[in-house]
Length: 329
Image (tube, rainbow, N blue to C red):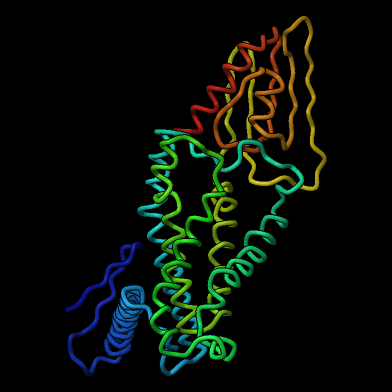
């Protein structure tokens, strides 16, 4: 007898005999699932091999037997692979490097542009379209090129053009950072490695399919990276500290909203008794209240603090720096 246990403690019994009416449908379902998983695994492996052979020896050839379904499959497989690579390798590596030297994307938040809709519009739509047109649109032989260069010379130059476009696409993203140390320039190839890898996949999709395919893939990737922090923040709890002297609550935010910002302070005789801050830059708060320059990537926060006896600026600064350390760990 074949027994499958369920969590409720019940057992389902199926005879090994092929004549059993209940066993055959179950076996068919399990077999179909296994076949589906195997086909997905084989498809993923084949697509990645195609990308490998393309980048090893780039050729200006479209994919054979093109269909819309095949187009979608290639985009999804490549997106999934990029997510896995970034989650397992790139993000942990960046986390480690950030411990050695803070990696600065934005030293002071621009409140006017730090909204979700504006970020989504620029990052997930306008930027991908512009970058694909600049770095990959010309990577196909066309009628205009035929008047300038013959096909044989184009085929000879194509490999060089592909490599140049990928390298330029990767290193142009060095402008994302505000660092300027020697260490930063030493690790820059690592910092832009996700763009270099992405450039390989996008170039493959552009050449083997068309420019629209690489644009769609680029839009989806940037859109995912824009939305993921919001999904993560849903599970984050506010930072809270409470003693006999004070009560502190700090909430991390991803974007500014349409709500008006708030910056209210109740202080007397150089002691701070109450603070209510909404949608302000952490670096801005430290600089304004404590004259402290925080050389780390800026974050947006809501903050409430109450103290019966009041806190000095130094005591308040220590509270903020304790929060900063907790965020780093």
